[in-house]
Length: 319
Image 1 (cartoon, rainbow, N blue to C red):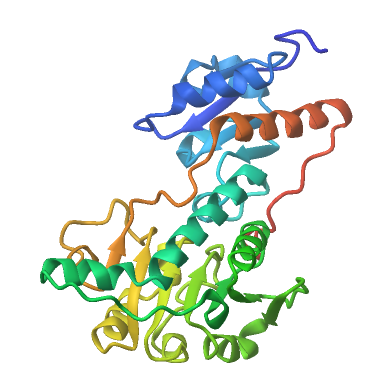
Image 2: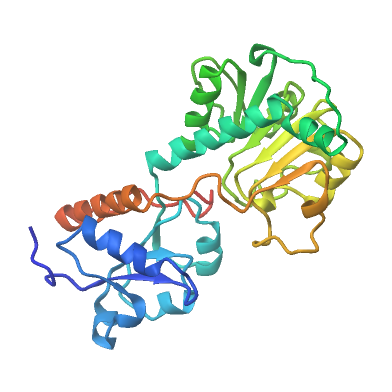
């Protein structure tokens, strides 16, 4: 084991107002006691000149520029679109978090909110406000099709949960995949075909140049009238005006939204008061500090041992 201090300290870089910097540093230090994990502002000028790697959570790009020898960054988030945008054409390698616990937590959220829509909880909530005692028709899961936009680690885990609950499951990805018991679609040409067979659509896509605005007036119109939508990905994948129009026209019966183009969601945003929208404060799959820190520690240990970087983000694809 390398003695503490044999390598330059590893800075944890986040915005000045990030509340969990101390918790992350504590979890990361516990996971790799052979390293020295420090807040960026604790680095001396000499230490900044020698840092080759950093761990980041929505960092200030100016702080990264103050580390001239930096080779790679390890993000503690699965989504890195903001980091890519901030760094522009930088040659820095970015490693995103790939955590099985995160996938399991997201799959749990997908199942929970699919069941919320499947059992028409929004309908019962409306009836309660009207003092209306009226059972609604029951439909078996086997007669409902849930379609997943995105079949990466999160999508695959969600598909397994949905299949176990009895739903028919479709999945769409940029390149067609082959998952057992899942009807798979690939590429933009096949997207309308899948949407037309969908009762509940779940978005788990990364935000890239190709997925920004993917759910717009044209694609939402491909869904059967009365379909429902869950967005657990990124807000900018949906065109807000198109979604509100689809809800107002009853093309869509309900939307569960956990992510938004601006967060926190501004008080004046129409989603807050819309009767067919459930607003969530970006809570579908919170990162688990302990498991995430262990994964970051493992990647750094392997880098220290053989100099090999973990798989990094393709800046063109965005993930």
